[in-house]
Length: 268
Image (cartoon, rainbow, N blue to C red; front, side, top):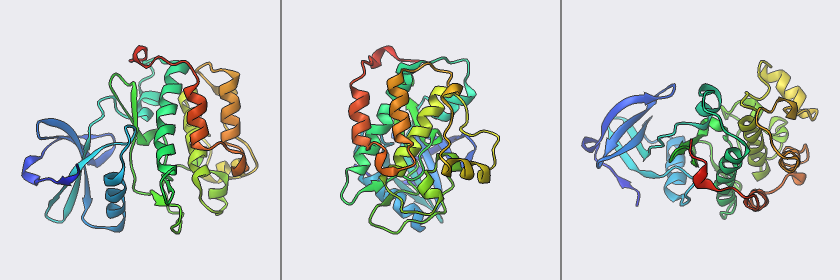
């Protein structure tokens, strides 16, 4: 149950990643993450509302919020495995294979499928490995950062700081944002898991926009992790230039669940 937390009950430790406003801490005897904001902005209220209402095992859990002076602190679940981005790019000594990627991609897909099934439909809009976190020997994945989440019925704005490589072509072109934009972002993130490379690295945003809108996608030739032809076919469908040809998150979940992955053997 989400609730208001007394600031005096919180202790603060070191920052997490590059963000000074996100730090490890303790509350009620458990390790937590605190995220500090200037109080009561529209973005803060929206993120709180969406996290408070989320009820899914693959979405970061919000314990509650705390107010102190002009600031509001989100008190959230601590993920001891760090971000998926950090594992992919900064911990090259940790090796993983297709089974690990499918496990992570499936858990992310389940979270998005849950969001897309809401009425009205909810879309994440800011999906990348930087917003995916791991725990339990890196077997469990949860998505975070709901700052830019929107109900599909509301007006969509374009000022989202997600790197351009994760943005679907129709989003780049200013067309309507739909759940299929999340599908595209999910697919690029899966390519990143398999390649352990940054998509379209060393290209400017303008060049990425030109190439993506012309139909170019990250190359399977760059994959470091061997994967089946079936996985490549799924990915090809999910980053199709035509949003209507991309799979729904529900279909992605159903397809990945057919694969024989024994989760308790995947700990890293």
